[in-house]
Each structure stands twice: as structure tokens, then as C-alpha cells.
Amino acid sequence: MVTGDLTDTSPMLTRSDRRRLTGVAVGIWLLLLSGVTCVRAQAWTSDLTLWTAAVAVTPQKPRPFINLGIAWDQAGQLPQAMQAWQTAYALAFQPRLTAYQQTFSQVASLTNIARVLAQHGQEPAAERLLTAVVARVPQFPHAQHNLAVLYARTGRCRDGLPHSEIAARLDASFQVMVCP
Image 1: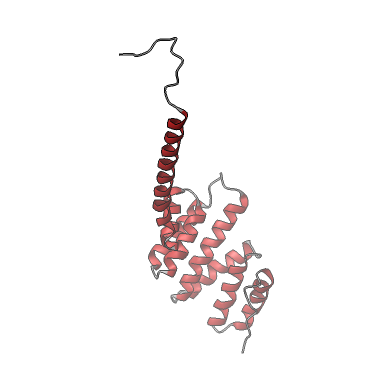
Image 2: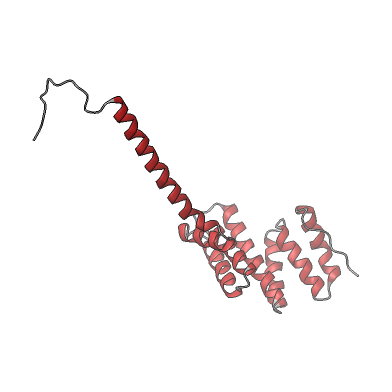
């Protein structure tokens, strides 16, 4: 049933009614945004939850896997860390990535894998990986630093000095090591 006719020019809602409805609508909208924010903020509770969420959202990008591997490593979960870095390395060959993204993802993944191998008694494998990374991308300071540390740990500190100097020159957070 329809009330009124086409000649009825009285407004359906008064100005006061429209303001009240607008206020209610804005309030509901803000409440919804707050709820979404609270849910989304759960991903930021730790590096592990952050990078796990990032991998879920962007499963074809290598960078979140690299960072997830670091988070797993810091949590003491080496099998998961190694799996994340291996996944990042495999994803790093996608043609849709820029040459820089491909190269960075490959060398960062291999450098992290080599570091963990060296820390767990697999120095020869770690040395092979780090030597290959340094040969391919000599300006990657983390690989230079890790190779220098590996040489020092295996009694070849003098062999590591050039790598330590390069790492310190490329990234001020690295200090040149001192050999006995």
C-alpha cells in the first residue's frame, strides 16, 4: 500500500531524522572498522604471526618467505626456517619479478641457508654456498660477512679478512674482524 500521491511535496525524513540516521550510519561504520582493525592487528603480535600472515596473503612472493624463515630461525625452529628459505629460493626465479628482486631473493635465501648450515657443523656446504653467492653478487654484505666468519671459525681468519673488510665497507653495521 502506498500513501500519499505524486503531488505530495512534504519530505519523508526531516533534517533532524537525516542527521540522526547519518550519525548512526557513521557509528556503525566506525564500529566495523574497529573490529576489522582488531582482527588485523592479531597478525602483528610477533614476527612469526606477521610473516605467516604475509605468506598467506602473498604466497607467490619470495620476500615474505625470507622473513618468515628468519622468524622461524629466531624461534629456534630450524626445519621450518630452512623450508621457508628453500621456498623463497624456488620462488625467486619467477619471470614476473624484476632482476633485482630475483637476485636479492636468491642470494638472501642462500646466505641464510648457509649461515644455518655453518652453525650446525656443515661448514663445507656453507662455504660452497657463500662462495657462490659472493662470486655472483660481491656487493651483498651479509654473504661477505658470513663467509668471513666461517673462515675465522674454521681456522682461516686471514682468508676471511678481505670479506670482512668488504662487508664493513658495504654495511656499517658490520665491523672488520681482527685475527689473532
